[in-house]
Length: 299
Image (cartoon, rainbow, N blue to C red; front, side, top):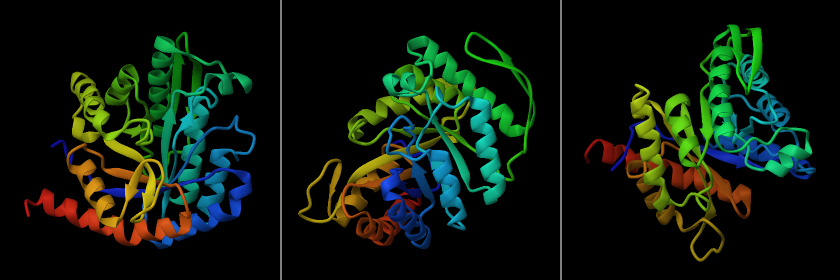
């Protein structure tokens, strides 16, 4: 059992496609009305049909009142860390603290290069990412930000405004070295979809994060763990990822919380997103919360 004890939270992944904007806005409002905690937007700006993720988040934030939003995850190789921190801080001010910052080193080198970015790899990618996390953390705190390295040249930027609530930095990662960066330097780990990092592969990744956190003098329990879950809710349904009725979803997410250590689940519905959201929010989420609380309390 590897339950880190964080309060559970639940979110919905939203499609950034321009042609889906009307449905995306409606889903955002439905997710808020249903009591979900997060709206998540992927960041692949080299896709011609995708809206810019931060522009979309700003629009959705203006159309909602309570629910928090985050990038799942922002591409650091196309978005300088000081500017990412500026965007996140600005939106946090505008939304009274409803922003978290999901970032990643950048998974698609060809797409990054096509937009003029430098597609770093290997050790350079690891060093660049870890330094970026430090720059963002300093920038979000306000004051002077400075770093001269082979990867960054920031010569005394005066950062601000300071967000009204802490903006956590969650790192999307799956390789050993990047997972170690999450353990040393991030506020949370964003796991790729459950079809890319299936449940049986999670414990070894959690172990790498925990080892790196401990070596850095951090408490592993301080690090959030976010799982992107693609699938279909419904008996007799077909699809990729987690497929089954409500009971199977409740059993599975409960196990993934108290055994695998995840505290946040972001649902990526495969079909009929509005009806799937309704099932997830009204039947799966409250049952998982109740079950996990009972287990944690020894009932």
